[in-house]
Image (tube, rainbow, N blue to C red; front, side, top):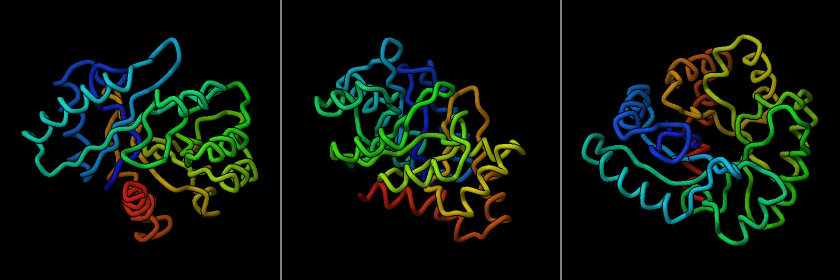
Length: 228
């Protein structure tokens, strides 16, 4: 499996506070069948604002530690960027990191205060980047299919969290979105405090839909994303 959204990189956000935590968390997800990770620490103004240079330094050190313990694991660097009106200047000035060496950017939004995500998606696309909307199921004001259809029409890719499939209410909503072809990735959004559940989530999707759809959501779409 390929995980496009994780907070495993240590020292830089609320994901892992030590190298030991990060390696343990990575190992938990490797045991679930994940072999490729895009490490996407938070960028949130006045909360987490690591420089690109700092992130690359920490990433390089972590990559060496991972290579010793998990030689078959591949790591890529990106950020989960909190999206507000500053996002355009952040992208233009290179102050945040797209996923890997691609033009894809992982964006998160306010969970409760209404935000026109489709409008942001359109403008981020116009700026030369493809937006990936993180954990679409968590935004309280995104309730209708047509809202997500508009995001997709404006160039967005859509991600949901594997853990959300373990919640009956969220699972029902996600099933409707998958049935309508609106989900591109199922990822961990891994933090040290969260259980790794990719294997269980994969089985849920394979049983409800098909192994082909599960493979697309957990592996093939993400692999294509990395290949740009």
